[in-house]
Image (cartoon, rainbow, N blue to C red; front, side, top):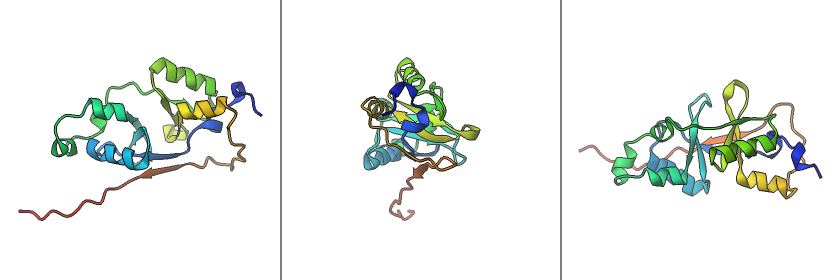
Length: 160
C-alpha cells in the first residue's frame, strides 16, 4: 500500500466530470447536478478554461424568483469574483487538501496543460486515499480524462 504522504493529485482525482458552460442557466445547472448526482459543477468554456466551480449551496443561496427568472441568468455571474483555488496533476495530495481547507471548500479543480480542467479532487477522493483505497492504475502515456456537457432538450414552444 502506498503511503498517503507520497500520493499525487493525479493518483486520486476524479477524472470523469460533468460541466456546464458559462452561459448555462442556474435552473439547468441545478437539473444537471440532480440528474448526475454531483455536488460540484465546474463552469468551463468550450476550450476547457475554468471559470469556477458551482456547488449546490451556491445555487440555493442565490436562488431568487421562479423558473422563468432563473432561466434568464447565466451561471458565470454566480462564480464571477469568487476565488477558485486549484491544483495541478503533480501536486502532492497533502498540498491540495491544505488548499481546500484554507479556502473552505470540499473540492478543488485540477488544471493540466494550458490551464485546462482535467479533474477534481473532492473530500471523498481524499478520504479514499487515507483509507488506502487508491486504485493501482497503469496510466497511459497521456492523461485520460472525460468531461461531459449535458445539453437539455426542451419542448418546442410555438411563438405566439
